[in-house]
Amino acid sequence: MQRFEQYLQDNLPKVPSFHPVYEDALGVMLSAGGKRFRPMLLLSVVDAYEPMLYNGALPVAMALEMFHTYSLIHDDLPAMDNADLRRGQLTLHKRYDETTAILAGDALNSDAFFLIAKAPLREDVKIKLVELLARDGGSRGMVLGQAIDCYFENKPLDLEQIKILHTNKTAKLIAVSLQMGAVIVGLEAEVQNELYCFGIDLGLLFQIQDDIIDETQSAEEAGKTTGNDSDKNSFINLLGLARSVEEADTLAKDLQRRFETFDVKLQTALQPLITKYLHRHK
Figure 1 (tube, rainbow, N blue to C red):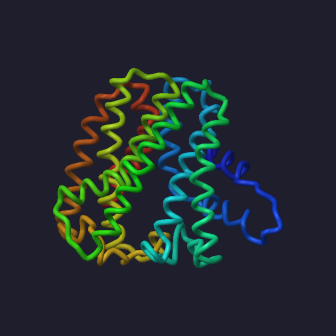
Figure 2 (cartoon, helix red, strand yellow):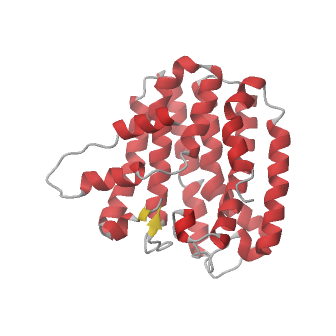
Figure 3 (tube, helix red, strand yellow):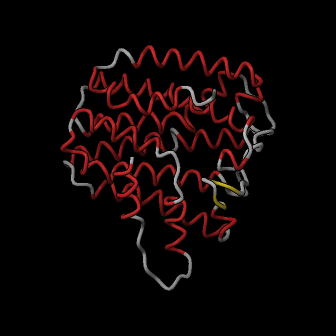
């Protein structure tokens, strides 16, 4: 974690110009902290199988964090969640203005692919990584989830539809982080698929836990605006708090069972992350 954090701080976007805040706006949400869950999933897989490729994978891990951060910046905009707080700090449109926030998000999206393209990895590997992030971050994945989330505010969905929403909006980027790590180290397609499916359910658990946190914690405790989901299709709004906690427990137990079927290298590498996040709703 410290190694990645140092790399990130050393490689914040540098775009000198006479614009008074542009360069700061690109880096402020990246350097504000966060769980770094997606890059750590990728780097843990790489470290488990090919530690020599760890340095080459750092730009790809940073690309994931950049892409995720772009999605948060846009998610917080007045047109979407209209949130004031993210990672314990003012959201970009509050700190600067809406135009700066939109453009910073756009820039981080593009820069993520630039970082992958420039990573010191084989060209065929990089093309596959770009394909996977574009697939799950774009119109067939995260953006679809966000579109459903915004369009169906105040229009209740059923449980299956809510799962589709959050599979796209949250889970796919978590799942593809594991798969991208597997691509870098050349794991078999079958193992890649197993990791991806595990990541989808891990992402759904992550979202249920976020809904529970939104319901039970203050903005100061959570480090972001909470109590903002009353019009949204959240697990809490459909199932209530008690049933959402039950759903999270069931999913966590199933994920733990599946995790124990992974090979020892992978279990050892992922254990700290998985243990930390399987039960964070408690």
